Length: 205
Ligand code: MD3
Ligand code: FE
Image 1: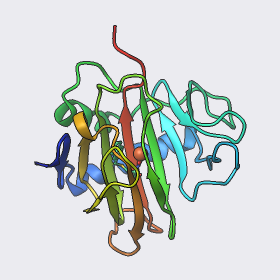
Image 2: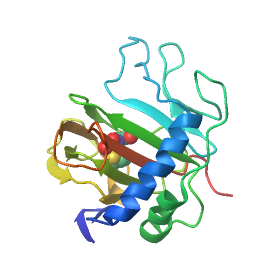
Image 3: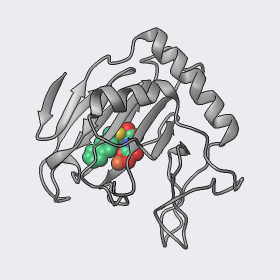
């Protein structure tokens, strides 16, 4: 475990291979209950290259008309999101150190060629809470900068089983995924990368 920059804490190989396999099994159940969907950018309606779903009380969604927001139900099926997998909560509890549970776990699936442009995560009210991220499957090139889009950035390779805790001064940092590296992991049959991000959305009373 080490601090990469102010508030960004890296736990390489937090999960063992056996735990990663078990977590993928728990995620299959989530995706059965809440199928992957393709969010659309606000206003332009441009589709994300990443497919997503959620677990937890709240899920992050986006569409052309209403933009980025958290919802209690799946945008296509209308069903409530399934619970956050117990193995994922382990990272929130053991690495995150926040006194309230996460309300949302966004599940991002990267097929070949998928990426995520530089952005800030600011749709949550509880900006004092960290975001806890879990990487599974193919490695990726992750980029993080400061709170200004034009500032300098640093790149970090994330591997299957790694956990990142993003809090403090890094919580509003610009960040993105430049590319995944197909063939770098045997965890997911058919390849690809999954990223889970657990978030506290509402302020704790
Ligand atoms: C730094 N996901 O879902 S996870 C996202 O790998 C997102 O799928 C990326 O950015 C992925 O919003 C990166 C690591 C991460 C997550 C949230 C952050 C880094 C962050 C919030 C603020 C700063
Ligand atoms: Fe993000």
